[in-house]
Image (cartoon, rainbow, N blue to C red; front, side):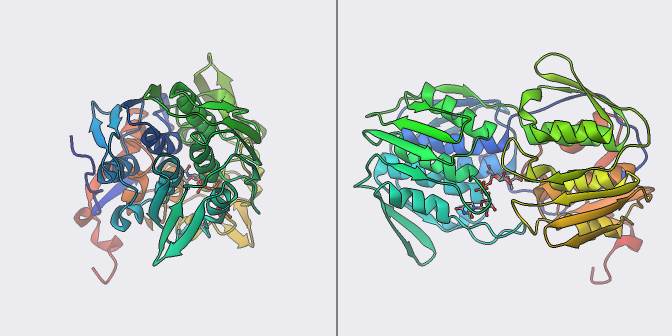
Length: 443
Ligand code: EPZ
């Protein structure tokens, strides 16, 4: 099975609005847990097997990068990968790294295992300013020499030593920064303490995988982690946790269409502040066991809400766009404050094209909800914006045509197919099938 099948640039999604979603949907493995775990496999020469890995272009990219570093990478079945990094080298290729920021997670494992790494600095990102200063500061605090040479971060980790460091930043903790600091210190003899660490479930899952490989980590899930370095790590078999962001996106799909859904495989205790906001807005979330959730709405008329995006367990920034689309359908004033990526509002101009009433003031999106949305051709700017526009299309009058579908395929496995199984009229089509009236005069 190919490692890196190119995303289909020319596909668009046609969404016919007006369906109340109904039925059962299964949540897949977490993208943001799987990507750092692919990197973590590099910490041992032995084979690691990752199960419940989502079938996404980002995952295939990561597999390609590991392959380029010299690891044997094999996909066995749709959601299982075997990684054997017996002989690896420290240089990651710009051509691959530039496609995916999460490749920065290679830094920690390469420095720990090979005592050096050369990783191109990630470029710009549409969701906002995303520096890696905290990643590099953590390595320097651990005794590594860090330099930037023609856009490539070069790290010499021969003098790494145990230490106590604070890795929080202006916007709170850093998720992949914490992952990198953990992975950089698991092979450093002595006790390393990370203060201000991220508590995301993806970090807890990474620590569980590393512990299976023989690492000694305490405090996973808290802001204070202690890592006792070991000489070597061995391979392991690990099942990736479910994707809480995908699961919550389906909760919002059920709520926005005022439907009735059962969401399977979602860990309800990982939804943090999101659950509270949903309930306050009038969405019923009824757990059916540990990993099944029934989603219904009390009435057509729901309550406007306010959110502030924060690190876990606060309201996830990766759900802000989808929640914004939901707020557009609720009469009244909703306010969404984006504290993690203050300019992460690329979905709003597209929602305005659908007739929504939203204004942006600094980090706040102010939604005057309740106005009926109209179908329109819209453009996805990033992964979560594409999900938000699909949710809006599900309730809009007429057809919505979503361009740049490759953004969606980076983070949602078969979302259109899953929505069709819930009764939605959604289909992937070649761009050439766009109605003439929707074509840009330039086409
Ligand atoms: C992770 O990105 C996720 N990606 C993002 O999901 C998610 O939006 C983000 O965490 C926040 O929850 C993966 O896990 C692969 P951060 P990450 O470092 O680790 C600032 C999606 O849609 N910061 O926690 O890159 C940063 O600018 C993606 O799936 C620094 O200032 O995010 C941001 O404001 C998008 N310096 C804040 O911290 C640094 O060195 C949090 O970023 C690092 C971060």
